[in-house]
Length: 240
Image (cartoon, rainbow, N blue to C red; front, side, top):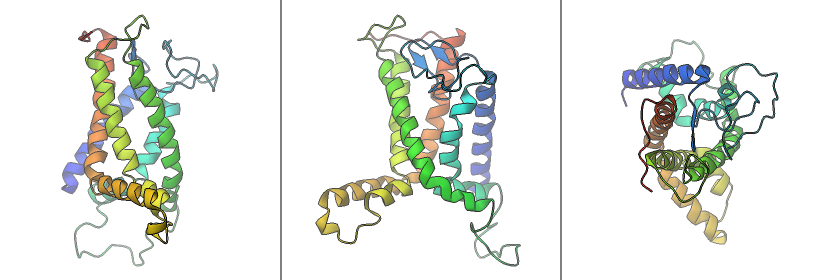
């Protein structure tokens, strides 16, 4: 992907996500909750029937509750190998082009502060798994109606399901996930199950860039859909 397109795409998403994260409104329309605001870790959240409403930070947190949650997926994506390449080249112009020398006299890579913090990616991976699990729970709650009764489905249900499918695909396609599954194996023949899983994850890893952008767009679409329904700008079509 051309660096300019990458830079513009990331800038557009960051602008939208910043607006929605600080808006602190229109993030719940029963039974749908925006992925930007789940789980809710403060007591100033809108009542979400059966949702991941866990006020661990109590009432002292006066800012948008989304700011407590987004640090985890944001940290995961900022330190992601693909996104690092994307914003290094697209925003920092590092390197500016192939066979063009760096302006630094000595190349230090990611061995000094602050870039050494990129090594935290392996830990953000585990936190991203937790967030993905919670968003899966939210998607399952989409099979209820606005009164909490099960056995119903609307367009929003499909939006949340598509979003979580892409999030899981992106998360497990992560290089850290591939390393956890089979990176330390010395004899694949002695671990056939892990070797098979390692191969499957490797297939997804080859599409890591596609999944990174697809899941990023799907998160924005899911949030915007909930915003439209919650604000009354759009009525969620119910299939049954």
